[in-house]
Image (cartoon, rainbow over all chains, first blue to last red; front, side, top):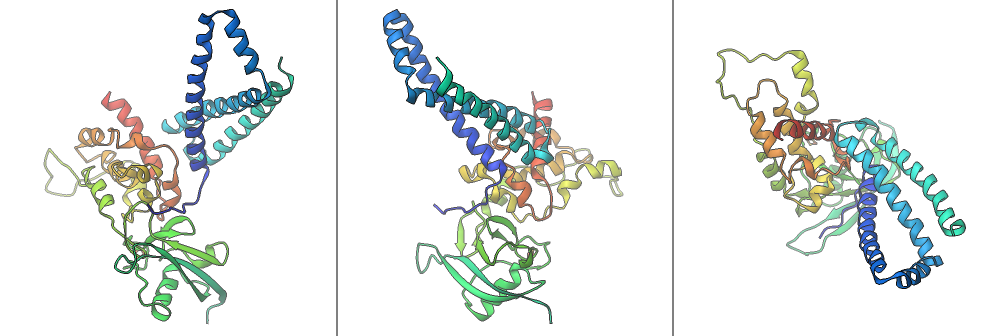
Length: 118
Length: 238
Ligand code: FES
């Protein structure tokens, strides 16, 4: 395999971040189903699991999850628009807009999840 | 005498399978003057420093497409890109990514030509040709203006990550060619061609990375052609 030294533009970042956040969501959904299945094991088992899920590492994980959801959904709208031929000439600018919106919402939400949420 | 731009360092990809299976990078220093293109420098290096340096070139006027290579991380025509336009004094010259390297900067373009053949890159007229020319309105001509100037240098397809991952994907170069005929008011194979580009190796491999837009040395926009094809494929083949 030859290594390619291709210059990374906004399109590359959009593509790779979209793929990575998509895979992260897939992993999360699998875990989510596993967590939810504790409901049918009774209240005790579910509550115990919930307690361990509100510890610090999981809270940080939750804010990363929030970041992945935000990016994947908002950038997904951008990509669907591009596929429909909308905003092609401004695809670099729209990437940075998506990125900025995700950063603001993600950081605010992350602070809430890690420090303020019950 | 033209103004000198000073010393530049060229770091060039070298590969000679008869000597070593591993590619290496050689460094050459040379004095560059204003107006010199990257190709001028490669020719000077070949003439004065290392006669074994191998690359393709023919027209030296950005029309044959044979000197496409990757310069400072971006595909371009070496005969078209002036050194003065590059940032920094170190210039990295690599063969086009995505195609197998034959030697140094020379790549095997078979995959690119094969991808072109898959979209029937010729004019199809089922109702026969008239005795005289086949006129087209200026508006109809404008529709395909983006695509008729393609010189088949292969820069766009070589810049496409979808093509790096999977060389069965048709790639932006051939899709631009498909666009050129599908949206030509005189062509009569629109349906067949649309079906060809609608497959999983066609327009839907495009992940909107848009390296091709930046890579095209002629300023064409394969990405916009692909978007138009996606819409046409959805509307006309469902
Ligand atoms: S030598 Fe013909 S395009 Fe550069």
